[in-house]
Amino acid sequence: MSHATPPDTRLPARLLLLFWLGDAVLTLAQVYVFSALHGETPSPAQLLYWVVPGYLVWALSLPAIVALARRHRFENGGWRRALPVHLGASLAVAAANTGVLALFAAAQSPGESFGAVLLKLAEMRMNWSVFTYWFFLAFYLAVEHAQTAGARALQAADATLRASQLEAELAHARLAALERQLHPHFLFNALNSISGLVPDEPRAAQKMIGALAELLRATLAGAEHDTPLRRELELLDRYLAIERARFGDRLRVEVRAAPEALEARIPTLLLQPLVENAVLHGIQPALEGGTVRVTAEREGEWLRLEVSDDGVGLAPGFAERAAGRVGLVNTRERLRKRFGAAHAFAIGAGAPRGTRVSIRLPWNGLGAGEGALAPG
Image 1 (cartoon, rainbow, N blue to C red):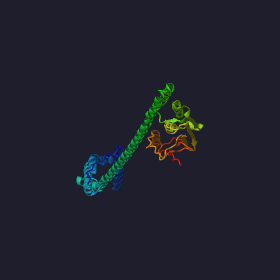
Image 2: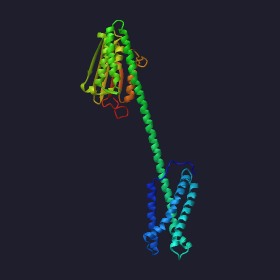
Image 3: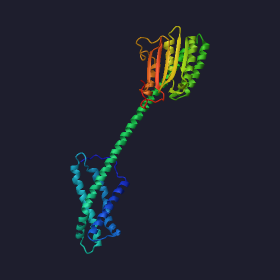
Image 4: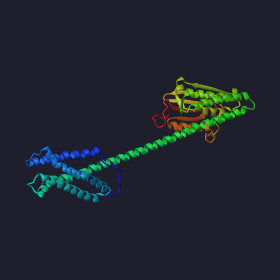
């Protein structure tokens, strides 16, 4: 016997109605056949008179039957206690059903004693009433099992959905935090460049402040995570205007973007930290300056982006985290969270010198887990 109370498994009204309508049809057929075998042909009114009282007994008994079904259960070894309980209950309900029918039948047969009518009805209805009890019990338990299994499946699906939503929200929050880091990082470096020009070249510093204001307006105006490459290059040009004011002829920039690549969407401010890294760590330390090259082209289902310079190059044993290069670390992490395995990010030596950063992204912009293939 199990005392555990199952979830709400009340039978839907339509199932309850369907069960008892089916049972009523079978009962009417049984009564009609039994009467015909004894040479009688009952009218529809007589059939209802003999059957309806019994269903009043069933209606009054149903709450007790359901309570017994919920309390005395067959699973987990409980059948040893449940079987005799339900056997006794089925006999009691069948006896009550037969007794009530006998009272109504005796009223219609004054020449027969109540005992004779009761025995006749017991022969005809007792077995059927016991069968009806057990059939209804099996029906109830089947529906209960189906409802419980369905509720558990819904709970499991809901828990899985909530976990997926929480995971997505967490990834989105981390990505947003990484993107927010770009603004102060870039701003502090730009202000540092301006402060270096103020004492000796105030006019150049003034131009840089104007360019910085324009860039910040353009950058902060858009809150989208993705932007067309064309727009990204416009923002990059505003940033380079600041750096050109600082470095003069020592900084040269070449941008080569295939026309079809200009409309490809990429994460906002993806190129700026890479170009900034090339200027600060590649061109600035070189006495003669150098060139920063930005290229973009389509390769089948992939968009290839490359930022390279011909500056001093990577130091032996270079490690971007150890070197504190926030732009590289941030960019790598943004791409990992945004695209998962469906992207490539590589840092290496340029030819014949300098540094090269290569990125491959899905041309259709699919992120991790959305069907894109990792680049080979």
